[in-house]
Image 1 (cartoon, one colour):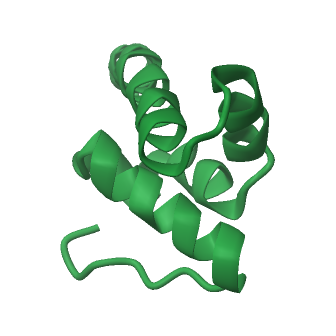
Image 2 (cartoon, rainbow, N blue to C red):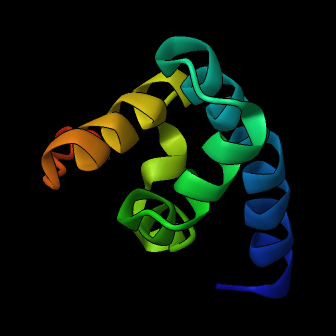
Length: 82
């Protein structure tokens, strides 16, 4: 990945992550600080941080749903387009 691509990817994450946290908070009833902590400690977030996973292509709500699946079942089933 070039430096410019890394900058763009980092900027994309900076836009997506707050939206995912807001979705988790709204959809599942967690306080924003708790939602943030739980997301950052999840495998979904770890995978999202890897550009090659292509998870950043998913909507914040879809990412929140993946996080919820991991949180409640311990399993993540990534969609085909990720």
